[in-house]
Image (tube, rainbow, N blue to C red):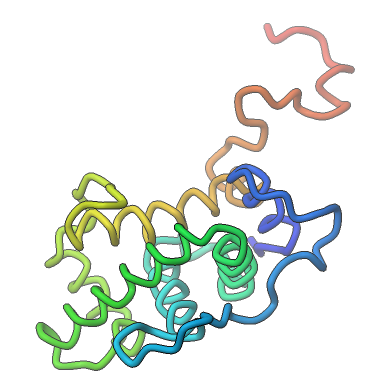
Length: 182
């Protein structure tokens, strides 16, 4: 199943980001941060980390992950300063943890099995998400949960798990032409 720009727009709409009626409103390149800092990751490094996390948490049946993540997260970061700051700090902390425990400069530079082990060691799978919590809680909140929300709020992701028409969605014109369920 291929994620499209339409999927990214649908997920952004669900997140309360109004991006206009066309996919041209989506960011095509990683966001650049106004302030340059040697201790915080650049926009490109943030996107590489988000894509690396998505590659772990998205089902293998999904394709076009990079474009989807850049479109969704880049646009969301451009529109929400607090979100942008939280993601950037979470990525910086994750890279610091990676440097200490895996002797690598960046999380995104690890192979998939090492990234999975790192997230397990950090306790991300079982952490309660919190934007102001520990590193584990913030990684869960800003990186893992946000990416999973984007996937399953999209039409393709919803179809993957059988929720093409979430609660409150009327189901399209064919639902009005059918009789009641038996």
